[in-house]
Length: 270
Ligand code: LIP
Image 1: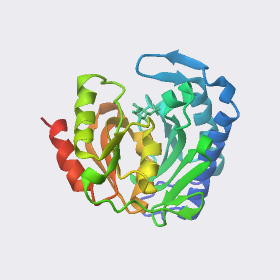
Image 2 (image 1 turned 90 degrees about the vertical axis):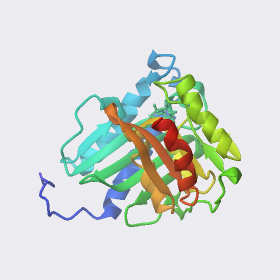
Image 3 (image 1 turned 180 degrees about the vertical axis):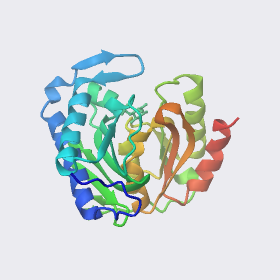
Image 4 (image 1 turned 120 degrees about the horizontal axis):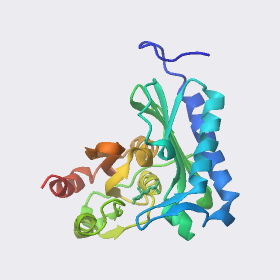
């Protein structure tokens, strides 16, 4: 076994890492697609969340691909997020089904997300949206792609002409979440809630949404998609961090970033 821990060891070429990220996301998504008849097969159904058996299976599927390629790398995922964050130069961050509640209800906006951090920095990311047949991917030194074709963020530079996506923070529904939705609605031409953070971010990368903000998502929701937005020419920012890998997160086409940030930050730090 090779250990990749020394401070000066060069990173594995991103083309190799990216191939593993896309394969892991694709295999996880294909496993879920092959089991669409089990959409209702949840371990627990709460008011704010659904814990799905296919979430667990898809994370195992993605992890198996990663471990077969790189047995010494660490895998951290939504389904094992209670474990301490791994100490390893290479940490793969998996969200097996992002948009689980969409999936559970039969909406097609869900995805499998696989991102890799090397020494704390995003190296590669892949987001597979199985029911749309779309694979978004990027490496830190390459272009953002959708199904192999380069993508680019929009050029909208006025918030009042922008389509901005947001979401309802699952642990804090009610007035708290509503304050953010109201602000997004106030500043945008149109607000949207599609229900899957990584899908929203890929749509920002592809120039179909101009920005995306949520007051409470998680590291695994954005680990792959944030890199895809940045490599498509956009800008991402953690506006606030909380315990348990929870984040207030903004992704934009870049041109709208400061306006969105300035509108939203005061709500996070009243
Ligand atoms: C979900 C996000 C969504 C957010 C939910 C949840 P999950 O991720 O994609 O944007 O509104 O609260 O965090 O739990 O389906 O992986």
